[in-house]
Image (cartoon, rainbow, N blue to C red; front, side, top):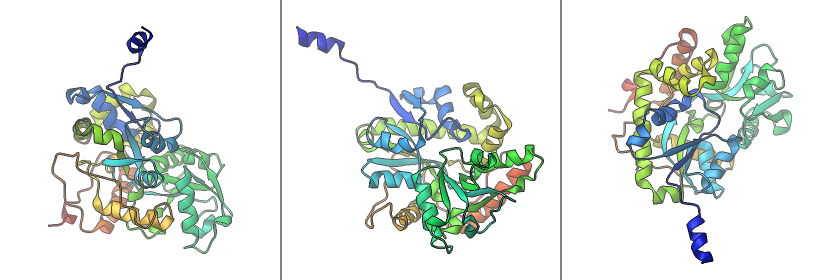
Length: 355
């Protein structure tokens, strides 16, 4: 009898797929939320629960531990998570190679040379930012003791503005735009918001270590391949809507997330637009580069094999660009034009594709 009662009152297994963002809703999360609000997930037969973390550093651990099924995380963190025993795999890309670097305001004692950080307070988001900064010191005549590291979470730009730090690691389409908007509203030139790109400081040849990825818990992925395929089809459809109708997509997103209805968020959205992955494919070249970089940083063992797959994407895989350095140069020019002129334009890399 007691067993019967226990069986009747036992909680039911949820059919929902839990998905954890990498932080609070941001402009580049638009395709995920619209896939839900426009019914794309429902039409694909998947029920998605979208979750927000209180700490972005918890994402890979929660997914790897099986507490959450899927989520978003940067490439370097995804690689390091599995190396540390948290079984996660990237199944697609959201934001491709956003420029990432050390941000600062011109005139505060920091210049475009890394050695100018000597004696300065330098902010970083999480653990790997500190590892990156420490590794860079040895290439620029410094040691980790020559600067003061300050963990800021996602508040790097805010702390630079408030004078709590002199510089800090951030992304061009997010934190740099925040600094530019501060300069604009303060009567300063937006060009006073500066970045030393880490890919250039570290001679990486790409900014792919901060590519934002769709990741899965490995056990969930193995048990639910059709759900993952359905999720990605819905997100692909939503991404196409965002790319084809960016203004309408933004209006619909603001209904869902009215806190983003401000000039800063809109400008960040414009700057994210060129980075959105239209195909969602993991880029093999980028994974090779970042895996090598992770080994150089000491966060990956020598024989580590990258944890990504494109097996759950059913559409054609595009060719990778033949000249990634030229692509980066063109993207830098493109993003400066977007800063100055606004609007929604994509960089045409067709001429750089392999024939």
